[in-house]
Length: 155
Picture (cartoon, rainbow, N blue to C red):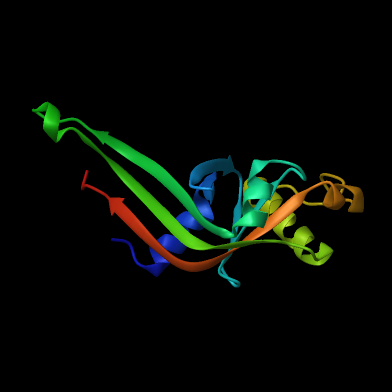
């Protein structure tokens, strides 16, 4: 089982995450890009202004968030022994709609910085505008607890 440092490292490097919501005993999954803010122990995701993810979170802020990565495939002599390396994290928390333009900007810029680390606003692209902030729902997932699993095998 990975420790805090390994969990945070996977949250920092995984390419996408899955947010699970539930309304009226109906689970719903939303796959998206995200960024993890270790200083705040918070995950930022974004959605459309109108859609199931936004409506579900506004009705029930309790969410799970998950990331995973696969390593090497591990062949074996018997079918039952085939396996693979992996790492995964599940976060339990509460999502809230980000209201402040400063925090929305922080969350969205975090997404851009994570996925396009060699690009800078004002140098390589036009910075996020107020109209773009107004057209996007940004959610902050406040981490209550997390757990991780990992399997690595020596080469």
